[in-house]
Image (tube, rainbow, N blue to C red):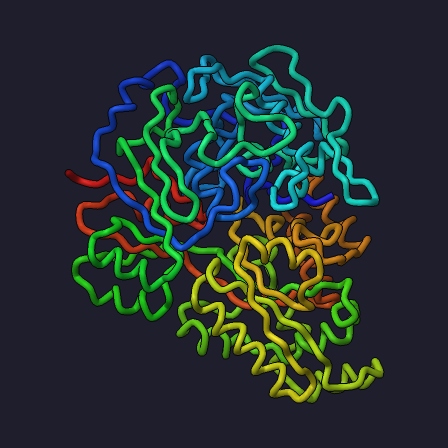
Length: 538
């Protein structure tokens, strides 16, 4: 069972300590806040949205909207590793298998319906029942679900108890002091209105409602979303702008022109490296950069004739030149990544660098010869042209060049737009394909359990019982030294088995025009763009 989120690097294991909600109490400010104190502003992005119904999304474009439209029980504030209350005023472990959350009094959805424990239970139950392959719940809620041999995920009987309208009790199927962090991610645990969202299918994007700081006023896929202040929201994250417009662009070059010309106030994800360099010279805009933990990596499909052979995977890893990718595809605006866990996380180690050293064709050839594999090996490599920005094509071309220059591989490149790509890569369309990752919580587990357990969220067919056991151990303890030791073991296993090849790690960058403030406040490693922190002067 795949788990995604985890403990903070400090202090998250105190089981009996309630997680106090931050900011003002739930008894103030709702209708007044709906008028706003600033003026509307426009965000431009090339990110795509898979679904605004949390039951059907597990991508950054979708979660950017969901963090602003929905509440979860608990959340993590910007530039912090401390979990705090959102719809819940507290979540407390009575033992490592029992987590009890108490809701804030008077919580309401934007349509006025009360938000109760019934809605919390319904939200998680329906996400599992819908079983959307592009959703997050079936991959992240492993502590309260069971996965059958055919891949069907079902909610454990009695996993969620609602003794009264304000109380939710989670009964976990194994000791897991990290389950609370799963509850911060909207794709797994956003709270929806049981009177509005159908139990067995997704709600159309333009019909969704939530209880977050903003509500959806209009939405047209691929074009624009319009958010307005939610007058029924009384939590601490009160928005200032009465409206936020989100405009979607298909080309980074168009997004660059839009922020230069004032068509959008903020451009966030994704501008080409050359565009960022150019905009730094423009006095009418500000290029802001925060700490980032965005990564790119290449995934092997272990069910294919090529991907299932360990020697082939190791040989490709021996050839892989990250420095060349960073230079030729990204103008050195990203850094080479030698582990699936980026630098700065407790327990991180450059396991791929230790295992393979510098790129070496002779060593790669020896690996294949020892396994008796004839060369050149025909390999299909997949990439998606829009979702991760224009430099993805440059990276794919560089990977092809490196593999073919070795004389050991013959590469066929194939590209597909994201909506189809995220489905067909799980079906074996490619032997090797590129994906990106944005953290949901700043802990190394967030980069390990989703990738290593039961084929990962990308369902590539990888399985290692030792990795499964180690993940369960680190998730079940609050001993940080022990967890970091296990993280190192898991990274070494990944370098040996090569279910994926890490490529690079980047920063969190936005460009904004005059009169804007608060943008830097939300540029942290979580990659949550918090609309409520951003204002525009009238």
